[in-house]
Image (cartoon, helix red, strand yellow):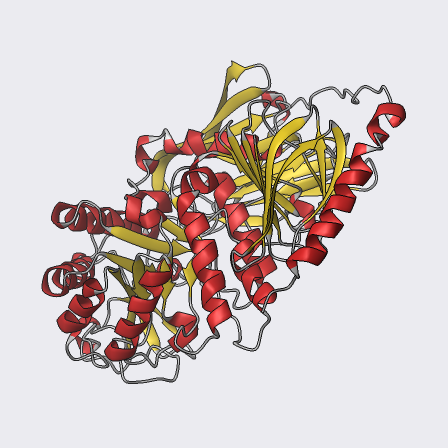
Length: 620
């Protein structure tokens, strides 16, 4: 079944060309204007107030001007004896001039910048906030150097004077006593595209030795099959090996076996989790070998901190738990105990040795957190006082020992644990669970791309019902083209035209992976859910439309321009600065070519058409 009849479609497209050839709307309607020029926002070091109960601590500030519009202000808290750091605020203000939106790493509503709350720590988001103008240029981006401990950021707009009042809250989560603490506040007011301002923050973090990102093997940037939405906990080795063979033929290179392999309990809780014995898959080595025989790599799910109340090892670690997760039937292990860390690390080492795994999906690291009654001392068998520092040490040892055995090990984390500290331990960062929600998947993966540097950004695994039209099902893929796809539908059950569609788009993705993932990435307006996404390497550009927006070449040297139609209409408007003489090819979402001809597109506006979930390829 094809959405367009080729002869009918060709006639529509030729009419579009005829319209463009006889009209040049930009020639007579152009208006000579200059872009508005607003003064940069100024934040002086002395205007930043430190307020709260400082107790025994004294605070000093120092400023370093990196270049015009970029400064780093350092705050040092020092006490003569070990003391508790109590909550304090760093606050300043500036006029709300030429500000129309905000970006931060969360998935919050981005329309209302009246408040822009963010709470970050090692396992939760990242401490950065950007305010930008209507041209999507940075007005001010501020970021913190401490991605380990909890930081709360907000930027309240005060209606009485129409000023922003950024407020950075430190030490709202209890920390062990100390004599010193230092944090840097990076303030960037340069007129960059908002996403470039964030990219530079990401590079700043990555330049710090304590945040050096984990190397990313090539396989981490290839499409994968996930068992979660397709099978949930009800997996069998036989079914997944069959699915792996089909998935490999469609263009995937690895399978992620999710929760369920370790227990026969299918109630979606974790009461029996923690022993990490393959109760549901007795011959795990045979399972892994079977998947490998299909040509696929094998990644296995683990929940880092859990020890279920019914696990055989529960009594062994009694007294060495942080808290009980009510409703899930599991306790959270305390990584401050060396024997807890060693148990966790040995579990992964043994799985790697015995089963021949290629990577791990490590889930729920955010549950390693101190509670109100946690004793924050290195006593009674604990060699760390801080839970955050112990978690950092645990994960550093996990990676050191796994990489010693397998240098190209793959480790996946998912939102919200996607910050600079997590890039030390994970080379695959995935969007959080948004089953069958293509738009949310686009928003999450785009937000991740902006700040992830060269770490592989993966889409949440996508699923659709077999009754879906092929054009509708394709949207699950088209919305995440600029991240690594994770497929999670039962491939033996979906229609043939769905398989054709997956095969076509995965082939296209693999052929253009270097552009989609590793070239210049240009996201559009965050407050509109990124309605157009573009990537280009100077020679080839790939633009995906989700709304009715104008496509423009991003380089004067393009020889190829692909326009993916992921919106609800067929019309594509292309604006050219100069004539484009070459070839146009149009494809439907299964890869069937419905038009291929030589064409000259004139400078100005050109009205083209593409099938729903299809594509136009222009070449010179």
